[in-house]
Length: 297
Length: 143
Image (tube, rainbow over all chains, first blue to last red; front, side):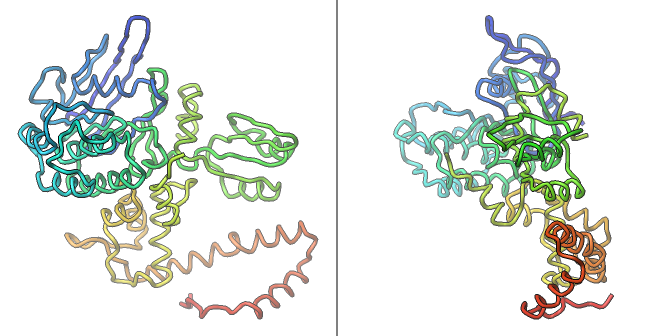
């Protein structure tokens, strides 16, 4: 079966800046993939190229087996919600009606339910919406389109924690009933971590990690306590980012710890704290590309 | 710093960061079966129900369910869902008994040794404490 997204050797150069550098990525049908990385890492460029809104400098990009640029058949099967999406000067309901014409699987019922969830007035002019309401409108379109490839690029500017939770819950509920391929680029990693099946971490235009989100749990642990005890415990382990303060040290140990390790840590009076996905991504962004893959294999 | 609501909810649901979520889901279901909250023959929540409740990916929830099914603790009834297999509770309680020494007794002895409490003293302490703490009625299946 043709994968919904297949990218090979993708490079995007802007004058003297390399936004994407030899990116290769294949996404399976029916999964939620988190696209993670710092601002400027290349996430938006990748999504824009997938959405056919930008050209690669080199490499191949196939969506449903075809190049997406000016390919209406492909574009109707995908929805791309950008951070700070710009809309024409019309009312909310007009935007939704236009979307309903474009997307073949559009659900008016879901769109109405989401409007109510986000308190979006259908008759309000889009230019009178607050920033958060505009983000909510993007989310309504992104979900109600039920497109086979659904891409959200930091879709929640101006949305508070409650509204973001509504987004996550509705996304999960609708995804359960209508599975599709979802790419979610986000820097609110811990919030979204549980939703993700796969994670792709981009750093400075390169993919530094692709993994099952669940496999990354427990793959790195912060060990802290007296310097001597920390040194004794971490001898022979791969470690990241050693920090010291007076007699105390904190080190990240890479690789899962077993029960014997846990007992040893407790007898050395060390504190063990597993790294969250967000902390892991922060660490991974500064490491050589294969460190984690080696240790999680 | 923004509220980390989803993380908070998962925490409230008792899921932690250090273990794969699928294993935690399996552990939760196993706990419920062992405690009798999910009776043998009863339907277990579906992948989508678990996903919505714990706010996790449905594939992750499915992996947790399948782990127990592969163990023979759950059985699939075509078109209806997963059900607690007969004998599941007895088997889970037996497993817990097997793990009891490693999980509770060994750390107790290690810590006692560190504090200079010898075995006799430890036994006395256990006896005194068990008189002071009201012990819940045994979850009791004799194995």
